[in-house]
Length: 226
Ligand SMILES: [Zn+2]
Ligand SMILES: [Zn+2]
Image (cartoon, rainbow, N blue to C red; front, top):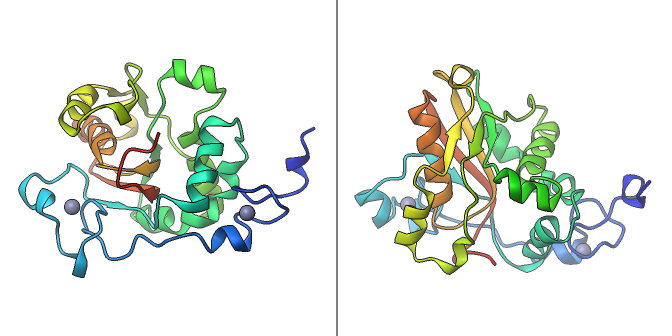
């Protein structure tokens, strides 16, 4: 059995620690005052220009940290280095926000899914695991697999914002609309950048009958992380 089952490690540098070790935790930067709709930094928490003109379909997006420092290292290890246990180690950093977003009765926690082919290659779906552990840490019912990706997404980092939106059109579908009807949804992902992915997933959920969608990510990035 792998040793991490017995000994908890820092999610970024793997020294014995719970969640992030102290030196790594000191590199965390709070997202700070942000647009209440899309989580983009905004002095005085005013609605940003983009949300004032073309609001996202989500009621709001919450992201407690800026993507960077050792948190970025931990998220990259989770996604690209086969360290599935990091989903559990990161739970304390954002589960209170998932709990707050899911406070409405009947709320469903729905992770942004990978396409099955990418999940097959990676061996797991990182957003699913993040959601499982955030729910466990917040004492919520487990996540719902109601959403699926209809086609693999090309790497978003190579696309412009407009291409990214077009590329996500119809990229998500709902498996069982009856499971959603009239319920508030907490849509979770690892990192939010422009909100384009969350918006595409939220549109599919709302079209299938979800009452509202709140997005929650661990971190907000200013450019698409590679
Ligand atoms: Zn560390
Ligand atoms: Zn905004």
